Image (cartoon, rainbow, N blue to C red; front, side):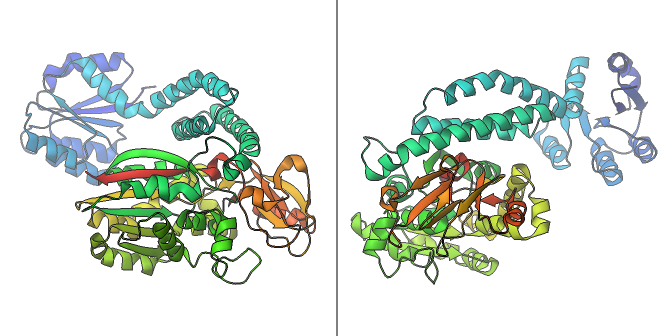
Length: 518
């Protein structure tokens, strides 16, 4: 059986017999024709894997033939072969969706390479990816077992995301399983690391601590303020680092990515805590003290993120930057997104423009509730794909395109990530215990100590004390916290959903990206 069926169209086909014999010796079936009209009829009646076509032919040109072939079958790859090296022809050819472009005279190996690139690319890339990961497996294993510090953990996670994205190219379920096992091991070790160091970071008892939610503005956003340049700080709620990598190429079309960094979300990795900490520049325990009327605990009525602009302006004043002309825009629905598109030019007069976009978080929560979204975003790969599709067609992308040629800088970040939960953990608490799946706080909590990180004194974690004897617990790795009553129902309902609030690489190590116009 032939490797592939090739149609070669050239008005001087007799002079190419040696080339055709060479391809046939490599296992390809080659059909030869001398004009575009016959080629169009041929592809209507016969299956073809690749068309090799001369550009200059009597009667109908190669480009004209290409257009007709694409009308018959859009998916047939076409390689244009020509003596003409003019830029206009190359532009027309590329615009007509050719798969490759060869300049006469071509030698047999050039043609063979082009065919391999088109026909075997996916297989060859998959094989190379598998081999490369096998070589890197040991390096990652050694890194995990060398007591990494917080900077090294950020590097490890970036490498894991890189290989996770590369594994999409692999058709080896076995290697994907090996990778997933290694990623699970990484999260196990990361939980131990956070359990050991987090309280020290919060209390400042350690000499060094990573940039975290409450220091993000001070160290990663405000230093980029520059007179005469409008700085846009865009916070996309619940954006994981791998989701950023999915939308990165769309940003790269219009902006130069200058720095691709990460920071640590505070615990709980939930909007109410992490995002308020970002804009206040404070830990939640301090926000509650200073803004007692604005801060709402989990069990209190009212919106939990209604005062971000107030917190932001207070932080700017505290950092002696209250002279900065600032705008704050929150996009919670499509109409607000369209309003942003229409108003984006007016923001250019400000020194700092904060845009909070909520879609990804809404997608995560809607996926839990809606069966159709569970099907569409069944795993991390499809979750990334949906995120990419959303951003490409979003009002946010439209708005940024409108100002891509202006003198602007962009810092893109998030408040926390999410993790796909698989392992249920039983928790018992009183009526006031919160319902969150990845963290809980309340009195008289009963749990398996090895399954959670617990803070009996919330202040050790920089958190408010809602009631006397309140404590916080955080789920680890892919665990989720369920009550014993109606346990089996909730176990099945929430398994494989994307949740946040706890301790995992995906939730805590999140992107902060610096860009500017090209």
